[in-house]
Length: 300
Length: 230
Image (tube, rainbow over all chains, first blue to last red):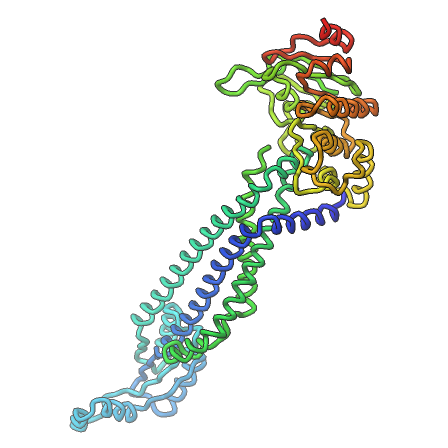
């Protein structure tokens, strides 16, 4: 027996199958392409969402309150330690600057502050946290470390807002995942149903193959290859569609929503990683669909 | 070569199709299975190439008990058995050559080697000049000869033919039967199911008669032919 001869036969047979029922295969390829295009768009949407969250997260600042007893040099020392701990940008706001800022914010009412016998505001450190530490857990841990530093009397980082934002992001991602799973399952069913039509038209061939001694694996192989080719074609069409979408609609979206979504909105829609994922998903869909479809025609 | 021991075949809710079949076919023998329609001839053949499973009893093919054969071993058993059907079962969109080489494709025989074997087989059945024709362009006799070529191309030890001349006129019937006899002379065990009495008297081979799922007679060719005449 020659494995090469069998492999040649499988490819030849798969090609004949594709030629034999072009309309059925067109439907399967289109279904896979639409599902993968939707998945690609969803991935693009998720990336935009991440950018949005990152830009909103950037607004969250950690304020570190320093003890009034600290002198100027000591305050700078604490600033250095906070910077080292958080790896973020830290700026020192002395009591006078804080008072001036408050006065400006209060407007006319701010003049009342002049009646105070002394400045009650402590010196503070304002910390912009790096993106990888903007989760509630990381912020909580950082706040605990900062509170333990000598000369620090309190830490405030808008805990409730960060938690709410993260919860929304998690819910959106979970929803997208469920929707993606539903779309993929539906695609497998549709692909299997269309492939069954193609296989049905070749049931005589399968019957004869079985009668002359073909194993189930031998009978299945060309159909699985057909599924694989369909998946590859579907992924190719979807990638082409995403590329065209990025070229035609991307710039308009970018200019319309850049103020909200940040600079990431202008990034290319088809990246090598996404392309690999979609090709993998396409192959999986095609193989899965043909595997389901061919199973029921093997009982001879 | 083929042995049946107390074999039964029944479908749920129906009377048995085969009852207590005991039969032995020697290597290189030519056997007619005869009897009226519904006697169980086709079912008996199907049991031999595992298209059906016996309800009860043991069947040995080439010394192997196929009543207990695993599903995954069936393809390998079938590679030693050629089957000829009354309705041909040819692929209409493939050429004669492709139809015959179909069996060799399954076995993974390299293309060049397969082509040689196919042409030798087409020569044997007298259809070498029709290698590139499509089955629907052939006469019934020619189509049946293609089926025989397909069944024999991988040199099986057993050839089963289910009413191989059922759709053919008398001249073509003789042509096909002569071919099957020729195959038998080359050493292949041949079992032919037929209800055509003229074949039995003309070819005078061992004849096993089935009626309502039971073997009612098992006679050598001369005896069977004499009975046909009477």
